[in-house]
Each structure stands twice: as structure tokens, then as C-alpha cells.
Image (cartoon, rainbow, N blue to C red):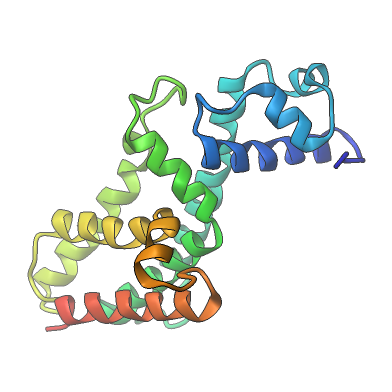
Length: 207
């Protein structure tokens, strides 16, 4: 399919197709020709927008992380109730985060690929890039646990457990399809998964 439009729309199309290719095949399994063919442009046209495959790879991550960061920050900073605290606040932010991952399953697979690699293609350490969000969450849990609004647990271990519970579900689609004998990504299944995660963390955290 050929994309029509200006420079901005072509760049967006390249990033969208690259994200799909990288998620399906990994960095090594994706070529510039694959991305160009998926967009419907020549390799030379692709290189007009990005100087290399690694530059595209990095741009894909930067775009997704910016989107994720904006959505989570908005959820944290703009609660419907200014007095929201404890589990009510955690529940809303957690639900928003899980829904973002559900809507961006290709990026979840890409993160899993990168988590197993040495990061040489990305150009920056993904864990370090996310550390400010991690530390902010740790600080929140420590404050709320100290005030008695949440049950006392190890905040770091709690977040790592959440990471595994959420990302594994959306990255292991094919495995879960065989295990369950049904589509784990249809709307009803995803809503059930979101509810299960919420109930799990509520049982762990409510005093």
C-alpha cells in the first residue's frame, strides 16, 4: 500500500510499519527493504527520512515512550477527585496503564525483544529511561503505606510483579491462545484480564 501525503505523513507511516515489523521479527529480522515495502515507498525515500535502521528503531521507541509517559502522567496528575488517595488512586492509574498496553500490544512485544537484548541497537538503556517513572511510583507507595492507606509491602517488588503480570499477558499472545484454547485478545478477554489484575492488586494493597 502506498502512502500519499506530505513529509509528516510519510514519516508517521514509516514509524507505524517499522513498529509492526520490529515487533513481529525483532531488530535483526527486519530490514530497511521490509519497512519500505510495507509503506509502499522506495528504500531511498525511506533513508530520506531516517539515516539508518537503528535511527528508525530508536524513533519508534521514543514515540511510544512519549505517548505512554504523557498518558500515565496525565492519569497521575489530573485525578477526577483532587482528594483521591490510597487504593482508589492506584486502581485508576493501574487501569489506565493496562489499557494503554492492551492498545499497544505490538510495542509490548518490542519491549520484550529489547529486554532480552543488550540495548546496542536502541542507543539508550530502556530501564534507565523508565527509572524516573519507577522511582515516582516507589515514592508514592512508600508514602501511602507509611500513612496506613495501603498495606505495607516492598514497593519495588510490587511494581516488578505488576510489570510481569501485565506485559507477559500482552506479549505472549500466541502461547496463551494455545494454552487457553481461545483468543486471549478479544475485547471480553482483555476486560477480564484487566479486572483480574485490579482484583489481585486490591487484595494485596487494601489495608
